[in-house]
Length: 248
Image (cartoon, rainbow, N blue to C red; front, side, top):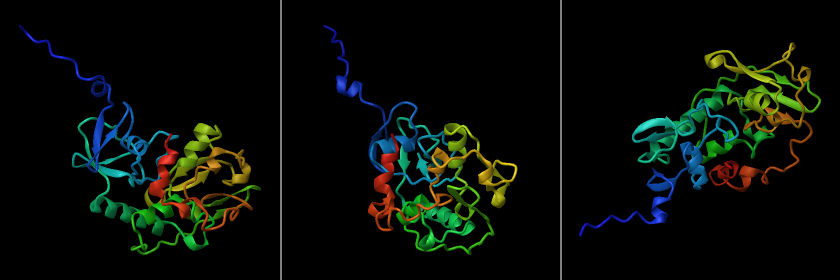
């Protein structure tokens, strides 16, 4: 008598596909990227330009991981069965530290005097990877501060060109206040107004673009120390323990 094979148990058959991240199975839903699936599963992959609110463009490269031995941006790489992903390795951590050091010296980041300290993703990520100093010679670029707006201040010295404010203004606020101009080391944030000043735009203090900046470029005036240093987000817990909260 011929035996008919039984179907797999329902729990196995319906289980979501997985990839392996640093030796652990990570389930994912079709269409999820590596960083989305990792964060949903409680793992942290460092990043700066990525936000779950916007389409990823993989520009900062901080989220670079190795997928089956090849370097890939975790924010733009779709999760797939059979992937073996390396994230927490000495090599990748060293690369991230170098990228962060380059970002620090390319701008003017004086953390002890920055009112964003403790809420700054650049600073928190540097702590996460163990960055202790800039390593490279600082550029000390001469960048203006735009204080023309009655409610908001733009300090271009801290811009890391992540484009989050550009995307938030265009896609959420529907105002297109910001843009990126220049090339190479001269790439910089622009204000879309005839004068180039924020006061001559339609930007309001409640715009999403005013809240999305991961560093201290867009600041609300007269609110700098409303939350004391020592009680801010990354003072309470490292970014590796809080970033998952940002991924719905």
